[in-house]
Image 1 (tube, rainbow, N blue to C red):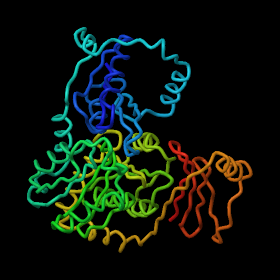
Image 2 (image 1 turned 135 degrees about the vertical axis):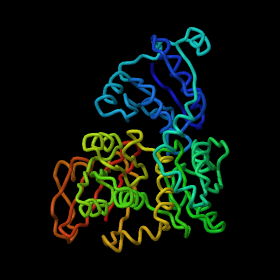
Image 3 (image 1 turned 60 degrees about the vertical axis):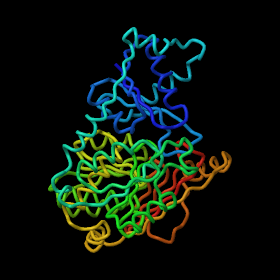
Image 4 (image 1 turned 45 degrees about the vertical axis):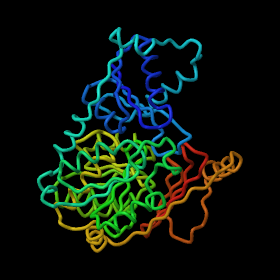
Amino acid sequence: EICVGYDRRFLSKESAHWAAEVLAGYGFHVFVVARSSPTPLIMFTVKQMQTPYGLAVTASHNPAIYNGIKVFTAGGRDADQVVTGKIEEQIALLKPEYVKSIDYDQAMEMGLIREGYPFNEYIDSILQVVDTKKIKRAHLRIAIDPMYGVSQSSLRTILLTCRCDVDVIHEQHDTLFGGKMPAPSADTLKLLSNYVVDNGCNLGVATDGDADRLGVIDEKGAFLHPNTLLVLLYYYLVKYRGWSGPCVRNNSTTHLLDRVAKDMGQQCYEVPVGFKYISAKMAETNAVIGGESSGGLAVRGHIAGKDGIYAAALLVEMLAVTGKSVSQLYQEITDKYGMLYYEDAAFTMTQARKAELQEKLFVKLEVPDFGNAVEKINRTDGCKVYFTDGSWVICRFSGTEPLLRMAAE
């Protein structure tokens, strides 16, 4: 059996049904998640039902004009490069006129397609691993911004079950996402920021279009960079929850995580950009947490992938258990480990300019003179220069858009 789910985007439901019809046409049994759902819920379902594969029709945090498909393998994991490579090979060989399919209703009558909505199971799986008693005692007020995406029911249900006061903005179905990118950032969360301050909320949480990424507004209305969020949660889980284990980040993410890990007697592993690399390294090392500067993170003991809803629940637990605000906890970390300054930017590239830069960086192996002593250079994923004083800079071409991305710390 193969699990198929979808988000709230234009034609997502129809596309999921088409996918189910084609799978049924080739004799596969298909379980279709009956309503638009968070990607983490679909991954959880693949794991729970022990299906060999799953797919979610979603374009995640990308603009409204896009749609796409995320593929999951056994255990609810992101498909690795071997699997995605095989899929790409098959797509290249495919002639659309030869694709077989069975009408959706007919396939349901034949028992090839069945529908279900494992909402309760997913919610319960999160409530079982967060400290609901402590959260209930804290009486926190939380503002939620699903960004017109799919987290409104699940996040609200989890937080209300924990007796939080919950306010929700941007929860209606809008395939244009209010005219903005459904990606949490300081720019897209201005309304949430104002709401948190105006209403005296303890926290504001936002999820991207398919709810695998999290954005956070602290009690003062400040946007928390995903780097900060990753460091905060690792610090909390190890220091306050008593967990033990390494952490994983990609090569564009803060090295403050390395400082915290080293102090805790643990290792921080660096992997290429792409969450499948983080998931794989987490499984290999039994890491506590893995994440990326773009806002995705995974925590041990839940699904083997990004889950913005679970991350939000853990953050609320962190406030309840420590009795401190987000800004106070981050102050605690920077007082101990120092302050690192991080900047990132993206530049649109023509194919000609891209080819020219690739030749310079990866063929001629040229690197600009930064005026800093260089410790090492890594070209496995883009070009990353590490300096002896602990600072670094990276540039890499996006795998999904015509962009050159840069980050430095």
